[in-house]
Amino acid sequence: MALLPPGPVFLLRQLIRLGVPAALIYAALNQLSNYVDTIPFWIVPIVTLLTVPAIVFFPFFWADLKNERRRRSLGADPVPFVTGGGFMGRNIIKMLQEHGEAMYPSDLYGPLPQMYGGIFSLKIVLHDLIFTMEPAYIKAILATQFENFQKGPMFIKNFRPVLGNGIFNADSDMWKFHRALTRPFFTRDRITDFETFERHADKAISITRTRLREGQPIDFQDLIGRFTLDTASSFLLGKEMNSLSLPLPYPTSNYSRLPPNANPHPHADSFNESLSLAQKVSSGRQILGGAWPLVEMWEDKLEDPMAVIHNFIEPVIQEAMERKQGGFEKGEAECLTMLDELVRQTDDQTLIRDETINMLVAGKDTTSCTLTFATYMLSEHPHVMTRLRQEVLDTVGPDRTPTYADLKDMKYLRAVINECLRLYPPVPLNSRRAAKATTFPPLTPGGKLIFIPEGATIVYSVFYMHRRRDLWGPDALEFDPDRFIDSRLQKYFLPNPWIFLPFNAGPRICLGQQFAYNQMSFFLIRLLQSFSSISLDLSARPDSTRPPEAWKLTKEGRQAKEKLLTDAHLTLFIKDAMWVQMKEATDN
Image 1 (tube, one colour):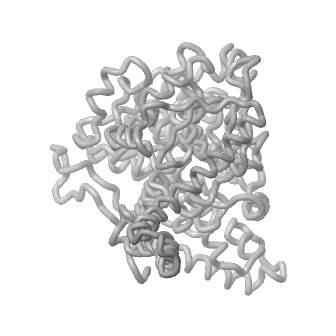
Image 2 (cartoon, one colour):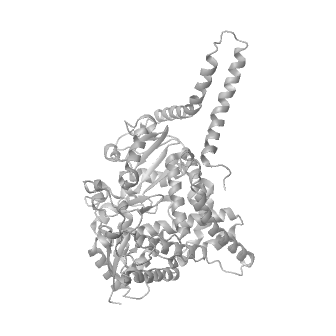
Image 3 (cartoon, rainbow, N blue to C red):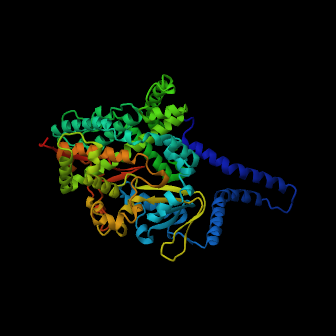
């Protein structure tokens, strides 16, 4: 527990950072005035006061001066700059605040992408922020100039309370160390062992049947979150979280068909809730940068959720350490989980804890996002549901457990998953920091290079990129899995695979990509073996989560078609819940 709340600590640090130099200058000038009679008395306080803005602004002014000299020496053009942003980016910040929680992911920068194209820059509180959705530039960030684009000290600092020094919150040698530490676990033998998938998928299907037979809808996003958490904890830790055994929520109290004494929002699954809250708070801190303590003035909002997470993780780690002492070092026990591999390689329990939390976040939320939106799309496109279910029945049958060979043969299943990943990528936005000044290729053939200043934050969006008509064709905003099978695959994707990056790319490409595909495929097969139709139950949806009326008026984008309100922290999700009804299959 922190001794002092974040706000006072932040203000004290700023007082020391700004006040100490000002006090020293005041003392020096005051002393000098005792020996130099020509110094007017009012010079001392004025020069002292000017010291504070000089300390604040001079580093930014000097950085801009260095970057401009570097740009001219390279003969490069600056990134197109957004005009009208106001002092310190006030107008941009106001625009983001006005959108608030009802912001569609493609509205993050409002009309700016349409006005300025695939790359543009802003000044937000004196900091260079560059946005891009250009495949060539994202390729440079993730691959060809990988060493130059890092998470950066601000990201690492803001996410350290949650991710620690784990793989998703590390740069350079520390990242390479973590990568080498975790890579051996994701072998083909491990990720094609479907016993864990089967156990938890069958349990999820069973409790879904029970809920639906009550005549009640089920919050499918909540169900999938439990399934992926239980699967990830079993696979990675060898520890059952058993969140699928906890009470399921019912719709809010305004839902007329609630059973007697139903609790609309049970809070039994504290670990799941804490993990989501921790990510949400950290993402908010990243937006605010180093000034986040001013918003959490008297309370550290990460303290309680991280206590819940650590209280679960730390005893599990201690058990693994004891198992190691009982045989791992002598080779008397086979390491079956990632946690076992970690404790075999290091005794640093903080490092093990950080890596474990990183892997749980990755293993739970990204897969949960895709399965949630896949179910959403199947409910909205019954012909896709019918065709996919027929492929399941033709390949696997109505009740047989799918194998890895089955998954490889099911091309339409893979196309459905890919189309969900395209329209609803789990990580819609990501960012890197330029460690040194560099250049990107010109915007137009024969044009000048584009200059990227040292220290700039580059926000890249696969969400925007995945929906671009010039990259995916005139029907880019439509849900159509056939685009990953028919001639559009050769026309758009195969010539430029960098237009599709749901799992990142380059050296930091997701280690668990194939694990995720296997898990998602297995669950969807089990789901379609058990149910023949899926429909949204919009009457169970809280009024606060209805898409804004303004979405229906949009002529560009998919907002007008959306029936659910989306939101995001590190990953994309549906705000509050996704209530569905399903019809049980009669052919099994």
